[in-house]
Length: 138
Image 1 (cartoon, one colour):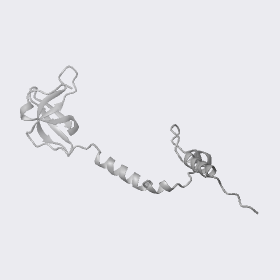
Image 2: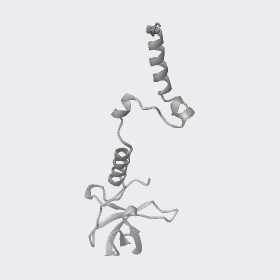
Image 3: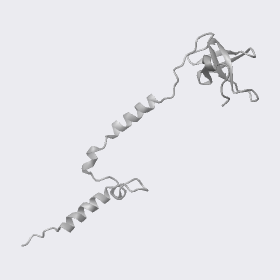
Image 4: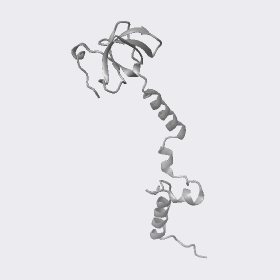
């Protein structure tokens, strides 16, 4: 009995279909095999992809590093700019730190008005000597 020999066309067609079925679709972002069978067929290049645990761990480390926490502390009698929420007045006023209320909260006194306010560090800016008279109202 004669064994059929695969032609080059059959081999190339099989390779093409294998790659096509394992290539993610641009709209669904899933490959056709996963949509049809519910799981992906193992592909040799899957070994090059990072493991899910590694991806999750790197994303978590990025979030921790970019947490947005400002590590700023102010000293007593330090000149600062504080956010003023009264509508007709300028947004930032020059003030002096009069009391430390915690690690992130301070009591300040606005210079011009002798007004005492409680402010969080996110509502305060360092007062640089060269720019202590004027700050942008944005």
